Image 1 (cartoon, helix red, strand yellow):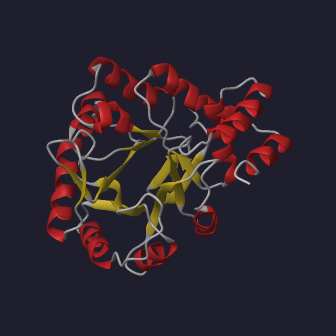
Image 2 (cartoon, one colour):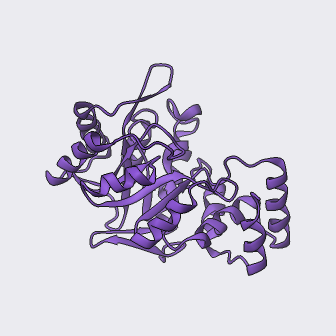
Image 3 (cartoon, rainbow, N blue to C red):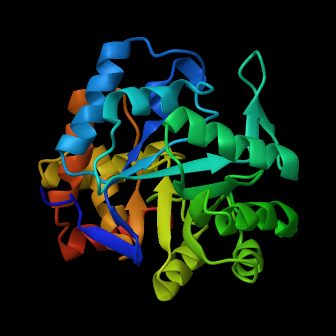
Length: 286
């Protein structure tokens, strides 16, 4: 089956569908504990593959461990073209709080836990999760990224990426090891990361945009809804289509625990926005 939205070839052994799947919502409320409907979660994962998606975003701190276990149960042995991108750099406490954890010893432990729970010998790609979604910190990430680079040299990780990174942090990471993906907050209403989006396109780096509808104010939502109504589409589908047209290296990782919502997300890859609609959406934050 043709990959929805086309594909991104990021390395000789790393090609992903631009329309990916973010698995975090398969866990319980607040990404903590088991899913409300386990059979449905497994069905969603199998449908992801059936729809031609070859890019799943996950982490062992979703649940924690719950989502990776679901992925393994639903999809292992994995299709040859499926690429699973995971994240390290955080832990969860007993109440579900997110706790940054960038200590070298624990990062190594987190990588081994992802390997074990996904049931693989090497991770396709690992993002270093930093402390901010905004990518507005220039704090050095050399030590934790060097830890992951060493694990890459050992063959436990094939490719490296960053999540929540600034331009300075991307530059620093690239001085240590190749970076194939940046995963930051970006959507039609939240475009502080425009420069990073353009930089990733120029350098052939995948930009995985998360929270595709996050941060919408009433007026912004109204504009999106008007465009969607004219195109006989949902606002969610239009927002995803705008992202795909914004940059050739944007990859999407919308998440859902609903089969219907998953199919709606994938349908965004077939929605070609006319020039006037793109211009209206481009001006949405002005």
